Length: 397
Image: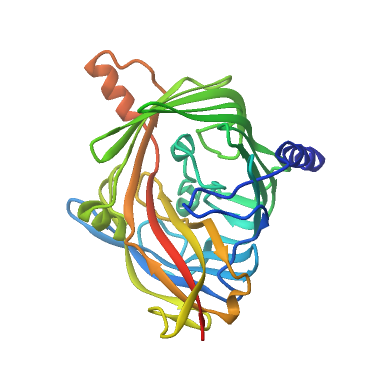
């Protein structure tokens, strides 16, 4: 089975022959890129969760998050919590919701983009490279492990490869070798072809092939397809999903993507979420944060010359009861000098904001009020938070 994963990886490499590296508005040089902000540099944040029910307030999910570059295309990532309980801070039994070493890189030429990521450890955010609209509907790992149930997430060695041609056609594959307390052997989680295109004001996407099965346990796939149609309405993007896998009922979904504003930024700062079961409001409140590493400044140094940038977007998603247990920083574009440790780094961070709400349900009939109520009762889907970050590098004369 491991050989099958390697064969799929090799096939993707042969199909690619080239790659680009994200739309960052900056011209990228051709060839391989392994973006980094400098060895030993990174950031951290401590936060605590709060759940506000009708007659109760619960503190939970004390969390310490770190992200550290170890070299070009190599970084260490952890999301640690203080205990293994869902709705209390009692007890001290540390748990790594996420803890992995990642090696990643991109290859670019005039025809398209190839990206590859190998993560070793515990992972709760599957997307690489930056997710398209269909991927935002993906189910986030649950919380059964906080209630005495089975371990959730993806543990082991997770290999993802993606190639997107300039025509909008692409191929995507993710394979896993389960480990670190989870048995399951080695197999593909998803392997499909995709297509993206704008037909005037309508944005269209489709995935066809081996797609992720939505009901838990996660990490399984089945053959099928999904379709997405979206358009802009005012300051929001609204889109609709239809999905059919061979062994699963047909799913339909709706997604609303928001623009940054005072409301979405206030919600994003504390990961605000309304939950149905149990009913209440969830938040993940930041307590303290900071930067890791040397030669980091708050503003451009005097006599400094801008000689490079790395643009990134940080993403978090959360489960239906508002538990934020993952984090990922997508490196979107880079230019300039490669030896970052000799340079002064300035980090420009935009506010977190609620970027998207994506709901999906195993129903297609919406012709009556009772059908709509049934659709809503069985719907699932994560909310997605986003923060745009620009790392600027200066050489001081």
